[in-house]
Amino acid sequence: MKILCKNLSLLLLAALFVQIVRAQMVPAPQAAPKPAASPSQVLLDNWNDIGRKLTAMAEDFPEDKYDFKPVPAQRSFAEQLLHASGASYYFINAVTGEKMPSGDPKRADFKTKADVVAYVKKAFADGAALIKSKGDGGMGEQYVDPFANQQTRFSDLAWGLIEHSGEHYGQLVVYYRVAGLVPPESRPKK
Image (cartoon, rainbow, N blue to C red; front, side, top):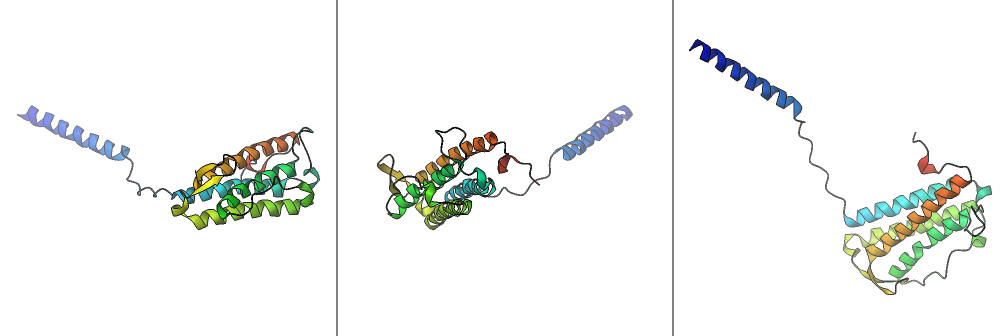
């Protein structure tokens, strides 16, 4: 009986030890995760993010290099910014019913760095205001895609322009590197 009691005590002690170890290994319960952002908020955040990146480049790139081209057949740095930003109006105008742009904004109409920076900021601010005005209820509204000449959803038009702007952001990164500069997003954060 004594041996049985001793073994039972050791068994209980071992079980208690296992429980203590488990309690220390199990992470404390965390707060419930935040709910997902709404579709229009996700769209707006992405629109604003690419706008922020292009604006940072427009403000950062030296004005004396604004007409820099990696090769003669390419657009200049300023022309790339004007093209990427101006394309926003194919989305905005398709939704608002305004006349479609007749092509890229002309560099001659934006003579200074300040002119280009202001245009980049305005184009993305206009798009952000439109996205905000539509909210979640407007994400599925139908408009004519000016390039495909077919009905498409509001959100799909906006996502297409975000993608387009991202592609030009990537091209502008190359302009930085070829010019011997480091793009703002690639610099160490303070």
